[in-house]
Length: 626
Image 1 (cartoon, one colour):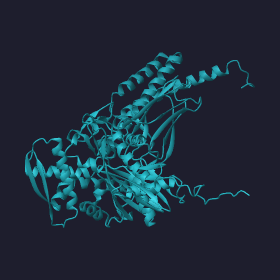
Image 2 (cartoon, rainbow, N blue to C red):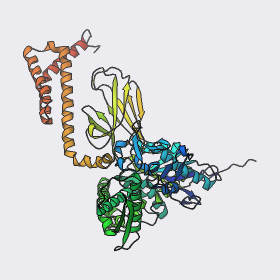
Image 3 (cartoon, rainbow, N blue to C red):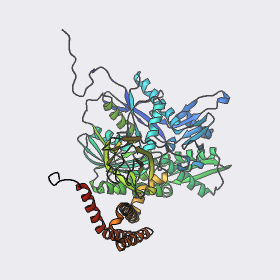
Image 4 (cartoon, one colour):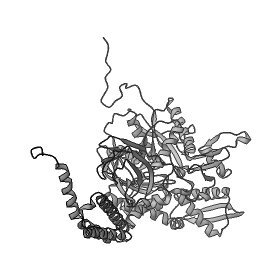
């Protein structure tokens, strides 16, 4: 008799088969890979026992017979000697043009534009940020496969919460180049919440303060019975530990009176010493100091740096993070007293100045019982294990959010938001629109992202055209525009005319990302210019309504002007002329008044047209037929 194999609910059909799935934290400064082994999430070490892989790639000169590259610690060691070919902090280049890279001229390597994308010039040729990131991801993939002596099934890769669609797509492209099947992209704060939530079994509202090497995220999450719901998110994708290093280096140069232009090697050496000094200051007593030593422009720098001096020269950076914290609490509709705990994520949160600032603001000691360098990778590994079908915990649910609103352009250059910011993802939302002109057979759609009311103040994501709309009167067509944001935060947009069924769609894959200033300022601008935007929107809407009224009146006159006496026609022409002149006004009330005047002045004409239409419809018909 054959035996039937049975399994527990949520368990693989083959309990002895286990898929190798990992979580990868692709960081600005360093990267890690973690996996669930023996029921516990842990970071995987390399052959030397080190779990951290510096996010640095060095390309060797093929002309010298050294074709290939160095990755991690080997590349990091060559950063001062060969800065032009040693690429670090490449995460800041992902999904961007050169113009959007902050201080591109000050980087030790050369960044140029190539087909609308920031790329790096190396001795081995031009390298895209995706190619450089793929080298790092491939090294982590090989580490995982060596650890399990098996092929990798897939990975959950983390990204900053404030990464936009282009940056997320670039991350997925890098993983594809590295031969990795991406199970999902999840936000770094969400991954940290998974690690803390499952390890501690805690429920309530938590703030995730994530300060990495190149990005800062702050998220408010509610943990309830295995559901991780992101209530609000904010941050700055151009702020991290690297900026603290640069601020300290600039302060030392100012103290030493060095004002000359530095070479690439000197800049690399200066920043390396600044990072060492910063890390050393975290371990000294409050009154202690650390010697900053470097040879710059033929001058030996020897500067004692105290904790107080370091905190003072980096105070504006810390203040920027706390401003984002206050903003995200308002977005979530809570106060700091509602927060049960503050989770610290990212190696830069080891700085005492950060922990003291966060602790003072929330009135409680932040949670640091998990390694801040590892916590994101650990949480991603737990999610990867569940997505691969290895976990019996079928009740784990992630409700992440999108950081900026998504919508389309309407008449007058206005934005109609379809997916509001902080909407949980994955999500699918739709809204109906119509045509503007009689006989219109096509509709151009412009997809935008941002919080402002005018298209000119938002970021363009994509454009596409819906063709084949049956000719109808203006306003008769019903076009449903659907926005779908998948679990990775990537967007697709579809438009369908309900009557005919004609449809068009686009997967939004912009070739560039938001600039540093745009990401930091988009939400701030939406509040600082709220009254201005309201007035601008009202003006645009008034002009659009006026245009429609003029078009409709002209169309009516073209067909039925014979119904009017000369004096009546003169009155309508005068009102139309006044409305046309009012369009030059910047006062919406003036335009609205002129529109209302024309509407009232044509009421009798509209009634006469309706009577004529009824007479034509009834002509030649008997009463019983009607």
